[in-house]
Amino acid sequence: MARPSSRRPGHNRKAQYSLFASYVVAMTGAAAGLLLIGVAIFDPTGFAAIRTATAEISRPASLGLRNMVSGVSSIDEILTAYWRAGSQNVALRHQVEADRNRIIEAKAIAQENLRLKRLLKLVDEDQSDLLTARLISSSSSSPRRFARLNAGRWQGVRTGMPVRASEGLVGRIHSVTPNTADVLLLTDSSNIVPVRRATDSVPAISTGLGDGTVEIRSLAAGRNPFNPGDILVTSGVGGVYQPNIPVAVVVRIEGEIAYGVPLANPSKVDAVVVERSFEEAVTRGEPAPAEGVVPEVANNATAP
Amino acid sequence: MIDPHLQHVPRLGRHPSRFRLTGTPVITVMLGSAITVLPVIAQAPVMPPFGLLLLLSWRLLRPELWRAWIGLPLGLFDDIMSGQPIGSAMFLWTVMLIGIDAIEHRMVWRSYRQDWLIASAGIIFCIAGGVFFARITGGGNIKLQLVAPQMLWTVLLFPFVVRQCARIDRWRVMA
Image 1 (tube, rainbow over the protein chains, first blue to last red):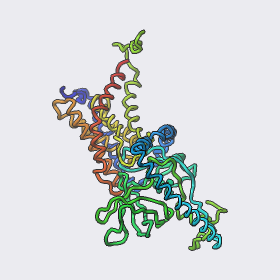
Image 2: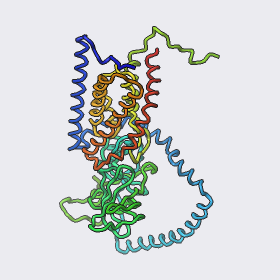
Image 3: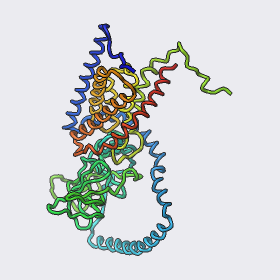
Image 4: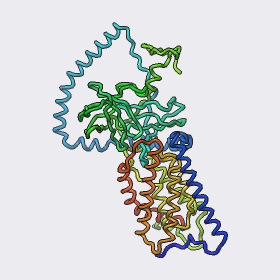
C-alpha cells in the first residue's frame, strides 16, 4: 500500500490553513501540558480537584465490580490449598497443638497486663481509628502506585491519614474527593516510612520500589543489620503513623540494602482502616495547645 | 428460521448518523482510558494503557479521522483516570501524533509491519515519558526497568487491538 495522501491538502487554500491551524493548536496544547507538569513538580496534588468528577462517577462502577470479584480474587489460594492437602493437614494439626498452649499463655499474660495497668491507674484508650472502608480500584497502568478508597472528605478522611489493614500498613491518604480518596500505597516509590525491627528496635527507613516490594535502609552506618525473616514495624517517628503497625518482612539482602515484602497485600485485604495521624491522635483534646507536654490520658470529651 | 443477522442488512446509500461516525472512536479511546475503573489493586504497573493502544489503532487505521490536537482532550481524560500527573498524556500523546504525521510524509511504502513499528515506537515513547514525568513530579526514584514488562506486552497487544478496532470501524461506517 502506498502512503495515504489525505494529509496533503493540495491547492485548496482553506484546507491548508485548517491543517496549519490544527498543528498550531496541537503545539500550544502540548506546551500547556508541559506547563501543567511544571506546576505539578512544585505542587503534586495541585490539580487533584480535576479528578473529583470522574472519581465520583466511577466510584459506583468500581464498587459494584469489586463486590462481584471479591470472591474470585482468592481462587488461586483455594487451588493451591488442594495441592498437597494431606501432608499439609498433618503439619497444620501439629501447628494447632503447639499454638494452643501459646494462646493460653498469652491470655494469662493479657489478664495480668490488665491487672497491672489497673494497679497503675493507666487507661488505655485508642481513639485513632476513624473508619473502615474498601479499596475499589487502583492506578494499574501508571508507574505510580495509588489505590482508590471508597470513603472521602464527607466521611472525615483527610490528606495524610495512615491507612492500615489487620495484617499491616497499607499506605497513607494522598488526596481526597467528597466520597473517594486516593491512597499512596506503601510500595509507591515516593512513600517513605520510618520503621524499626520488631525484636530489637534497629531503626531503618522503608522506601517503595513500585513493583510490590520495599527497600529497607538501616539508619546506622556499618554493615547491614537485617536478616531474611526480620519483621519490621512502624517506629512512630515523624508523627504520621502509630508506632508498632506491622510493615514488611525482609526477604533478601544485597549489600547495604535489604528488600522486604509488605505484610498487607492491598489486592487481598477485604477492608482497610483509616486512622487519624499519630500526632493528631496523641495531642487531640488538649485544652491549651501551647503546652509542650503530651497528656498521658487522652481526653475524649472533645474532638476537633 | 431466519438468521437474526439478516434482519438488518447494511446497504449502499444509507448513511450512519454523524454521532456514530465521529463519536465512536472518541468513546472507545475514553473507555480504554477508563480501564482503571476495574477493581484491580495492582502492585506493579501491569495493565497495558488501553487508551493509548486504541488511539494508535484509530490513528493508523484511519489517518484522515483526527487532527493532531485530538491528543489534548483524550490525553487529559487519560491523565484524570490513570493517576499520572495532569498534563503527562496530554503532552506525550499530542507529540506522538505530530511525530506520526511527520513520519508518514517520509515513508513511501506502508503496510501492516510498518504500522506495528510506528505503534511500538509510540508506545515506548509514551510509557517512558510517563515514567519520566512521574519521577519529576514527586514519584521518587522510579526505574525504567519497572515498566519494561508493561512496554513489552503493550507492543505485543497492538495487533489484537488494531483488529478489534477494525471490527468496530466496520460497524461504524456501515449503516
